Amino acid sequence: MEDLNLNNKKILIRVDFNVPIQNNHITSDMRIRASIPTIQLALKQNAKVIIMSHLGRPQEGKYQKKFSLFPVFEYLKKIFKKNKVSFSNNLDKIKIHSGELLVLENVRFNIGEKNNDIVLSKKYAALCDIFVMDAFGSAHRKESSTFGVGMFAKIACAGPLLISELKALRTALKNPRRPMIAVIGGSKISTKFKLLKSLARIADTVIVGGAIANTFLAIDYRIGQSLYEPKFIDMAKEIRNQYNILIPIDSRVGTSFSTKSPAIVKKPFEIHDNEEIMDLGDKSINNIKNIIKKSKTILWNGPLGVFEFPNFNVGTKELAQSIADSTAFSIAGGGETLSVINMFNIQDKISYISTGGGAFLEFIEGNKLPAIYMLEMVKKTLQNVM
Ligand code: 3PG
Image (cartoon, rainbow, N blue to C red; front, side, top):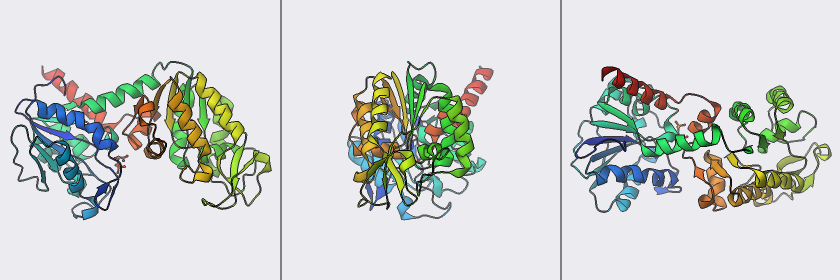
């Protein structure tokens, strides 16, 4: 996008404004803020700027207020005070002049969006002279607004946010400064084991927490009521034998999943059948801090315990603080990780915070993201004609 002349052109930008909204109020504007420089770039060049995004997962063809992007439009109106900003829920009646910004209603209300429908893709493409794919957070989706539109647009290109996301991820994953540490926590075990394997191949040490760590502990110990996934124990064993995985040597356990439960530090073999691991113990935390101090690259996804409960957030808090204090190149991504970063207010101390959730994880796993594939294909076709 930065290489093109945008003056007076109709620019359709796919952004990821899938943000949390409660009672018409945006509770985290991180994704919107990350896209503002892209919109500004186009407006400064006096382009006619149309932006589109999805929000949540509504049923296609059916308007539901709670999935409307109207609150995002109101937010943008306040940011771009000097420009005319409008909102449209009708793709057939788009009117826009140079220097104006038009926000389209949630693309997932449109029939065919999810299935990358050709008719809808062509309709989006007809709205613009240049299509800009800048929604890294949605780059793993092969939908009309992320994929099909680019195939039919006169020109399709990558936006600055998408490019900076890819650059940051490549810095961390290809020839990282070593030692490189990966941190994987959280409760979604099934989606994280593939990621863990990919990262174990690259990182010098993988620090595990949450339910992932519990699955490693379950290889050798009975861990009471703790959340873990029996079907991944064999895979955990294989990974542990092959790679350098830092498994907790002590944990904070409780007898009820609540903010009231006292947190008791125990070694794995001391855990009773009625107890549940909800956080790391002090010795494990110290080990992590020492490793982080020596690292030069840190890739972080997921909390190390039940960070929402103050009685079980010690490990996650100490991890967040160690990463914030580190001089290593640090990159963090994923929904829960962003909540942790907000909670401990360390946004400015992380080298790069990705706007991607699923896309971030899929990229690290080594999957080709459909939107990137589309941009590469479009580029190749263009080169062949020239
Ligand atoms: C996300 O929040 O990860 C992206 O916006 C993608 O949303 P989706 O999983 O509903 O496609």
